[in-house]
Amino acid sequence: MQNTSLARRTFTLGLIAAAAGTLVACSKNNDAPAAAAPAQLSPAQMYDKIAAGGKGFTVGAMMSANTVYVMFDPQCPHCGHLWEAAKPLLSKVKFVWVPVAIINPKSSAQGAALLASDKPLEAMTAHEASILAGTGGMTAMGSVPAEIEAAVKANTAIFNELGLESVPFVAAKNGSTGAVQVKNGAMETPVLSAWLGL
Image (cartoon, rainbow, N blue to C red):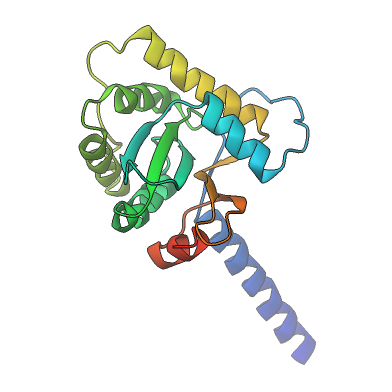
C-alpha cells in the first residue's frame, strides 16, 4: 500500500513538474515546416548570429554595453510575462526584441507591426497587456512595408537555423562575468536580473 501511495505521489510530482515546464515558453506550431538539424552552436555563436542577422526594436538603456537579445513570438503569453519582468531593468540594460512567427498566422503580422512602430515601447506594452488579458494582442492594420515583413521571415529563419523550438529565447552577456549565455523561457525580474549579472 505504501509503494502505491509513493508511486502516486511521484507520478503527481512528475505531472506538476511537466506542467511547470510548459508554463514558461511557447513551442512551435506543429504545422510549421521542420528545420534541418543544425550544427551544435555555442552560446557565443548563437548570440553573434542573432546580433548580426536579427532585426528587432530596441528598448532600455541605449548606451549600455550590455545588449540582451530576445527572440519572441507576438502571440506567446510567456513572452508577455518576460516583457513585464524586463521592464524594471530598462534603466540598466539594452534589450533588442526580435519578433519571429512560429505560433499562428497573427504572429507575422503583429511582429511586423511592432517592428514598424515609431513608438515600440508603447506599442509592445499595449500589445502584451492585450495578450496577457487573453484578447489576442494588437490589430495589425494598414499595410506594412515589404522589407519589414521580410525581416520577420528572416528572423524566423534564424530561429530555425539555431534549432530553437520555443520562445522566448534570450541571448545575453552576463554583466558580472562577461560570459555569453542563452536561455529558453520566461523569468521573473529577480531571476532575470541575477541571470544577467546585474
